[in-house]
Length: 307
Image 1 (cartoon, helix red, strand yellow):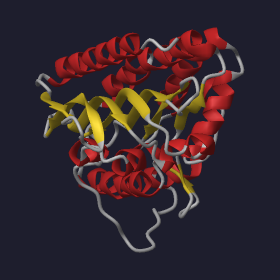
Image 2 (cartoon, one colour):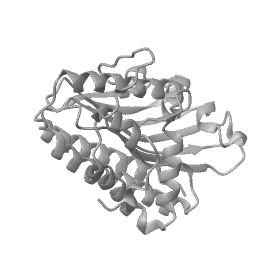
Image 3 (cartoon, helix red, strand yellow):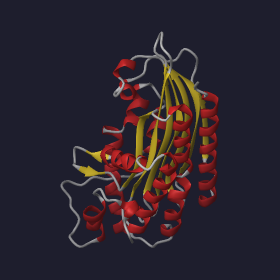
Image 4 (cartoon, rainbow, N blue to C red):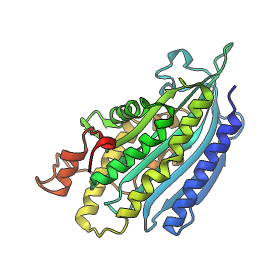
């Protein structure tokens, strides 16, 4: 049996814990935008968008909770389940993206969610998805290793095979196919996950969500006060352009939100506040910018590397 109220309670609590901690770190209260869809609309339901813009620590940071119902599962959500295309559905979850001001602090993304499809004449079909990934501008081996080890440890109680499987999935998913380039140094990603049954699949999803602060805050604390200049900010803006490209071209969550008639402001909250593009640019050999490409923007077994 699907306990949607237990799902909702968890996702709301996770959002509150993350926003509360980052509000403390920033010394600024997140803006709160609670919303509700009118009955009879294409998409019904409610949610809470929490946002910081222009902070000293976070140039832009958003953490959304949404719980929506619709009459037709959109193509982005039924891509791997064509037999469910067009079925009524219910979806809820938490999604966040934090874009720090300091270029030495990486951008981070985390999402945990649950879908319930309700095909006519059949039992509901439930699956979970989510994960977290790190997008550095100036990368540090110890940060990448810490992030991946935290992800691995969160998944370990559910089987040793999950972390390497979800890591590879993350490497393959957060990849800009039109540039043949990874978005960042990955993490874990899973979708259409139900193989442990509802209770254990939900427990595994909770473990990923609960690991977010332990995975990211130590990196943030190590790098937040590192001095930087215009060169570093300029490279950060250039690399943020890749983030925009991925979210608008490849990201299934963004496509789902737009295809299902979701709130555009909340969907595009993941975008960086500033980004730029240059024609056919490459970093100078031997620079810290070049090291990002040569040493970090490629799959590595971060959790097992001795540093």
